[in-house]
Length: 319
Image (cartoon, rainbow, N blue to C red):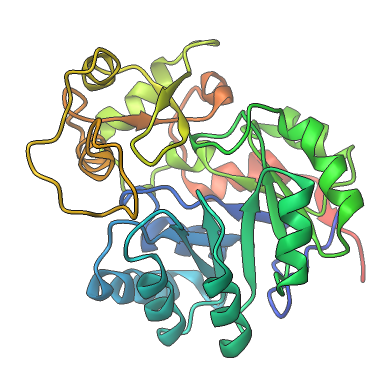
């Protein structure tokens, strides 16, 4: 019999076997194939909605559903995206199980979730924001620290922030940032977390939609390689160096064309184009987001094996 030390994660009517959400990684890094595989293994799989058209959103949700075998599929979209609420409305219309949002805070999303009876899970970086989310009807929150890949809302560790947020609200609180292997998982489980969100480890999976050269860049990373680049979104982001990021830091990556994909943009470079290029394998012109613990990843694995490495011998507590 396994050690029954895993928390039972309940987010409204979403009750996965394992207390894990796969992070939504844009643009087109976490699509239906990855989200469906995570859902099938007993987690919550997220499709990254940022940068997708309505047709693409529906297609990715349907792909995930076919793979998930009844598992839970959600969507994560940047609040900073111009089409943010349209993306979320389309996902709700397509029958999505969960709405997750980061890089900003949206009262409109909470209203949408309440009207459609779909759980909304904001990504927060402070107890104050978690309290606001709860008061407006959030079903749970993810507290994300400086260790996470992509856009960041804080310079503080998730391990420091989690107890503050947990104490401030009654809804479930998941922790995100710096959870890449079994050692990381056991560390945060000892903090009595309600669940975890994991992105970077799943980006280095066989089911991830990124090119082999993108994943190879992960495998090449050494401890301390992740650095913070200032995104045109207006937030810092954790990334690995590429020829493009070197030009962006030097101020030589200004976009020739702007498609107004963000509500506000510094136009220092095009974040959507840079992320798409990286996903396609063009690191000369692409930005590779990654969490601080990416150096722990030594091989690209199928999602099923990643779950085994995380949870082998662990089972949720009985309800």
